[in-house]
Each structure stands twice: as structure tokens, then as C-alpha cells.
Picture (spheres, rainbow, N blue to C red):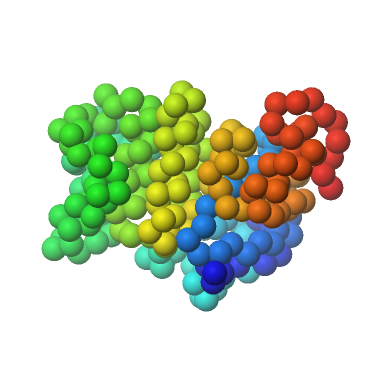
Length: 243
């Protein structure tokens, strides 16, 4: 497979404080990659750095062969990057159909209906909910809506920051299934998750972040079997460090 996202020696953070240090990774097109790590490891900061909403101190980000590290967030959006941030980010007091319309803001008006119809084919469970207020959807349905809204402009890279946060175990699995479905149409998915076990089962590749550094990367089915990962992130007690 071709490399869709090539991150080279990235250092990023806020103000004068770097949070992610010298991070490098090459992510293949059309795959699901999960980024795991403890609280404060820098996972969300890395996602923001890829979307251009935090400070870049050093490094390169090559997406689809184009350097994007100096692009503004709206330029990265136009280049095919979509971000679903952590927490609820829909318009709760608007109907689902209106949320879809809001998601069309970067498209020509003539393309709105076609883009929404295409997205509903990917998320058919939202079709009967179009007249429902977004805030009245279940947590899992709201997460699905937010993923769908980001998919409306047809991104080539979908960044998901804690998509299963606060959801029931069943809805968490549904979210991971949706990530795989998105990848099945050729979109590259990079996902930050605290539910390491569920996310790794749905992923092709895993990256482990500790103190802002990439300390382990490889096939997800191998990383999930790593004794250090099982001890540190899959529910068992451990004081062992990966680095």
C-alpha cells in the first residue's frame, strides 16, 4: 500500500511548551491506525498538530505527497483532512438534516444534496433520524452523526479523537465498526483511543505514545499481544515502561 501520511520528527505543543517530541510515523492509505497511551501522553496534541490547531515547533507532515505543516486548518480541510474532536461537537438544537447542511459549508451549493446522499449510504442508520434534534439522539448516534458530518466533504484522512468516549460497550464496538467501514472506501483513519483493546481489534496498525514520544509501532494484532501493552494498557497492573 502507498503511504498516505508521513510524519517526520514532529515536535508540537502550546505556547512555549512542546508536548509531542520528535514523533515520526508512516501511515498507509486506506488503513485504520490506533494511537494509544496514558493520560497526558500527547495523543490529542498530535491530532491537533496534524489538523493545524496547535503550535508546530519542528518537523514535517507529508500528506498525499504534499507538505502540509505550514498550511492553515482550512487549507488542510480542503486538502482532504477531517477531524472529529473529543466530546460532543454537533449542533444539538438543530435537526440532523440541518447538521448535515452545516457540514456542507465548504462545498458548492449544487453539490450539497449529492454529498449528503453519499454520506447517508455510509451511515444508513441516520436516514430515519433526519428530522430529529441532534441533541435528542443517543450518545452513539451523536458520535455517528459527527463522523458523518466530517465525511460529507469526502476527506482522504479521518482523524478521530476518543470516538468511543462515554459510550456503552455495544456503541463502542459500533464506532470501531464505522471506522473500519470508512477505511473500506479508501479513507485513511487515525484514531486516538483509551479503549485500547477494542480499538486495536479493529485496527491494522498501532502506535504507542509515552511522554509525547513514539515508543512502539507495528501491526495491531502483534502490538495487542505484546506483554508490555497487555500489562500497561489492557487492564493489568504494571510499572514497566516501554521506552
